Picture 1 (tube, rainbow, N blue to C red):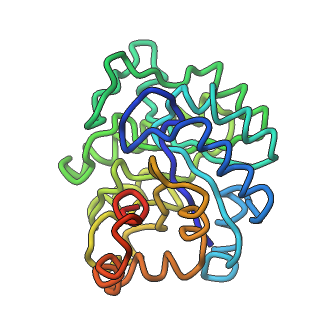
Picture 2 (cartoon, one colour):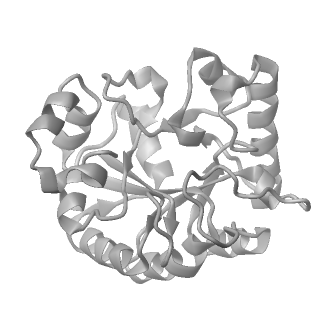
Length: 257
């Protein structure tokens, strides 16, 4: 199974986090035609039952809760009947809010995140929501108690808003260690998701791995990244060799997720 990770679906923002709306529309159309896309909760139930993610299916996730997911991704998801899960930074939903200061390449305008009203509208349309922590800090840099509080505060705020349990967590930037994983369990999460970036072999204890989709990833890249063999290689010691063998025009975002 491939769990795909998007961030923003936004025009006029040159960033590794921003996929152009037209590109996303093409990708969604391809997924709707050629892949069996399931909700993340469905995939996890199969994981719990069988001990492994189901083969041959895809799940879509979006990190950070950018408002562009509502503006540009939601209509496309509904058109192709594709389920998805959005991992929210809970502090952005508080009355005081939270500035989006965690991106490395911000646009020349403030980035907006989803409002509570938009979240509920999307939930009514079938979109699932989960936690991306409370504040989007590097959880590995927090003390254990502070990490537990951050993660628990996020889960409780989201559960109050959504009116349902929030058992899933995506680590900010995929960063975690044994202490963070222990804190996530103490904070009430049952499953954690990450985004392998290192060239080192990936340890499945770090969380359920996802595959990043980046600017420049066309339908061909999507086909590669949803092939069952891709994640096997991506999370193994074979990855550095695979990068060296990849044609130069297919490196960068295509092989960096």
